[in-house]
Length: 166
Image (cartoon, rainbow, N blue to C red):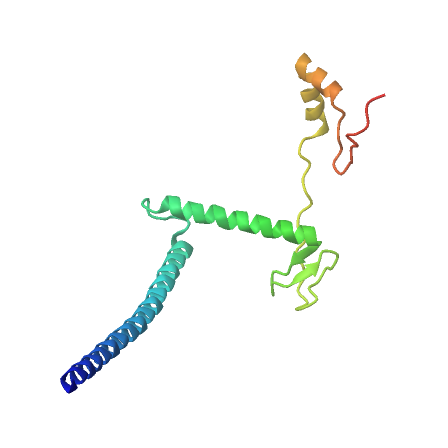
């Protein structure tokens, strides 16, 4: 019976050693995977920096192989600038060209750095009155009938759709 107990004891001891070795391997693998992820982050960051450097240096004359990508970036950046300008307009603010602070549009100078604020240009009229009259006279009879059926809605006007025409 001692033999059996010794064999069980030996098996348990060997199993414990194997489990210990496996645990060390798993722990070391996890540490290495973590270090790999960190280094991959460094690579991605540097790739991004190279791409940004290339874009800023060659955006006006990129290689033909990458011109489409450069143009997409330029279009996206322009769209972002337009949307940011719209947000500022909605807030009734302008951005200081010197320090980047948002200032009320009524101000002539930045409240943070004192620089003169550049006001946005007022929106241009879409169509001169003479051209609008010519367009109205050139409408087809079907378009004129449709216009008569639907009342003209001015910007900001609220129409009560529940009312029936009298």
